[in-house]
Length: 351
Length: 165
Image 1 (cartoon, rainbow over the protein chains, first blue to last red):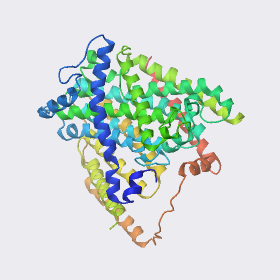
Image 2 (cartoon, rainbow over the protein chains, first blue to last red):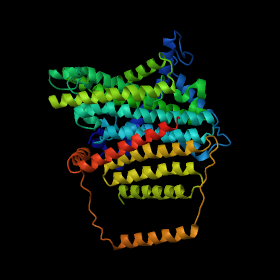
Image 3 (cartoon, each protein chain N blue to C red):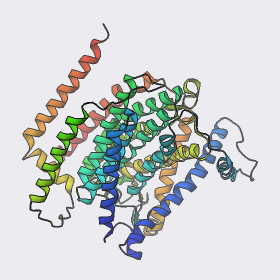
Image 4 (tube, one colour):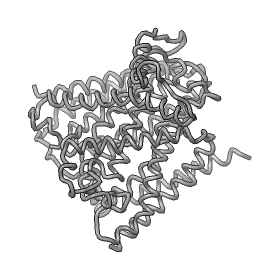
């Protein structure tokens, strides 16, 4: 079994209920501080100070924001479809959280080490699309509906480059299990897949291909999480706030939580595929740094760095237009990943 | 009762209840959203049958692809802000007789079949087995299916372009 809790508590129902708890707690804490982090990062990039009233560094800011959101009345528009309006935010968050089941936080902690882990992740996170469509349609609001349909068109298109660039690593590793991806890249920073993965010296000719694949995976997951520069779904100048318009209070907070959870989830996927997962960059030189507890630290550190890059890009780049978005996906990203796939296949035949 | 059995009955209930909603709902979009729960619960049944690859493919293809296309189709073919599309019941008497006949045949078949019940073997690497089977034993059907899909893609692109002039 891939999980230390099943070893401690046995293979029973209680364990299966307990395993998601630490992950859920992490997601909530992460979302609280990522919101604050986002505001701080944006402030520093624009030469401002950022939230600093609630504590010396504004550390309580988002907690108080959550308290404010809990107090707010849940306003449901008169002509909205009440049932689907209520369940849509929960479907979006649940679909995102289900993806965390296959994230390997450490060699002894993973929700479930499926043989099909990566495939499961891509399938299950695409479920959130249904929730977004429900929210957009049931709000009975033009801008909401257009926002929802844009989101769906964008996510469905960008699923293709995401999957294709991940397949490059799948081909080299010969597995789909997330835990195996991390295990294979043992032995230091040079054995990570961004540097061609483990193998003899000839693998270094793969570096350009792998760097391009990692970049494309990063770009397309950025588009799947609807972050700037791809946040056309809530483009405030055109659509007010997309599917979020009619939502208030905790239902809005669920959408927000789902967005931040997904930011971390896709960062975790890129970390596992290209940046060695929970492996320490020093390999076996310092065995202490590769102990299970430290593995959690490495995994979170690498993923949080990628989350920081996402925020960095958000406050650096302007939004793209919808036609530019689709052109980039279909005319640039997909052909480039196909060439990447071909090159890796040739490499695998020759070596 | 082992909890997999409880899970099975929960999933079966969800499938039947949401399928009833799909059929009897007057509003087409409500039917489409109810279909989401049906398809998702069906993939849960596949998991209980230890067909993990099929379960995930079910989510990927039916929920992530076909259902979204369906909802898009419904949304784009009617007025966007107030959906007026409704379904009606036609030919009630013949359809009831016909479906009752099918139910009777199905019950008869289920009761008269001898079911061999055994635990499904826990297969470790379903993907690699499926991949090998697709590229050796079933290579010809696999290639034909891909050619058919390619033709469908080209055909739909052609139809989409014709509207311009």
